Image (cartoon, rainbow, N blue to C red; front, side, top):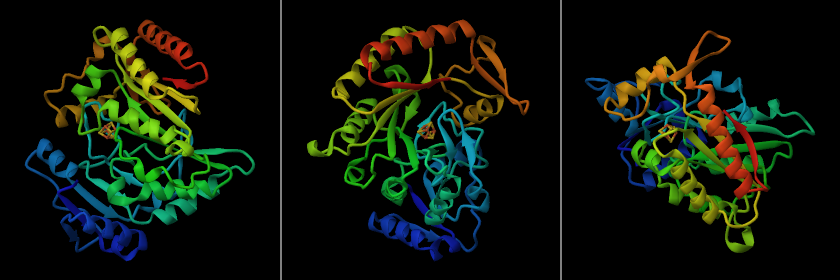
Length: 340
Ligand code: SF4
């Protein structure tokens, strides 16, 4: 629950903004209307305090026009779009560090219906086009405040050629089970080995709870589930001490939660960081135990001259082999979508 909920005047003029207002009022959260369409007054004395204030603030705003020009997001999906930016959790390796500007306030978009309408222009008729909605937020983590994820799922249920993908580290899925998704939404949870999730993923649901939520989403409707295609995103994979044992235990937990046939995929993402994300993460979590030592990594450059630190080639090969073999042995029906 945020400590403050701010609305810009333009957000309050829109029906979806009003819908969010009713939800947060029903939850008895303190609501403030800003005088202008700008977020101000959210900086603390230092980066740590600014971070703490921002993470406890939900701002309901109108997504700017740049959100109507979609970007591709390989290897996860054809396109990305956003129902919000920012996330209430505190992962010390957070993917958002360095990719979002300014304090990490959670901004939920009041013009969601327009954002959804715009997606049709990117569909390839007669061929499934996929859209990822979790690049800049954890959509389930704020769903009780916005209802926006359910709205996306309903919308994609009506589009024969469009597929939605979302991923979360939260577990509140009950209200998603009965939605008319038509098999067009793949629900995924992000999981990790116990020492990583327990030490580095503050404010999230436990991995056990995430797996129970995923089970609910995948179970057939006749058994009280949602009947969704599902997926596991194992990320960020790190070769911590005794990593084979810890990741084998994670696979044991996945096997007991998903102990029935279903449409299941895996995505495997090794840990990486950039100079920019390292700086931001160290300002947010100065005492982190996260390994951000460049000297043990390989440098990967992108076509725009950006630098990324990834594990060295030999380690990458060893990790990849382990994960692919475990999945092939334990989940022969599942598809591994990518390793990166
Ligand atoms: Fe960042 Fe995702 Fe963790 Fe939220 S759940 S803090 S977006 S890594």
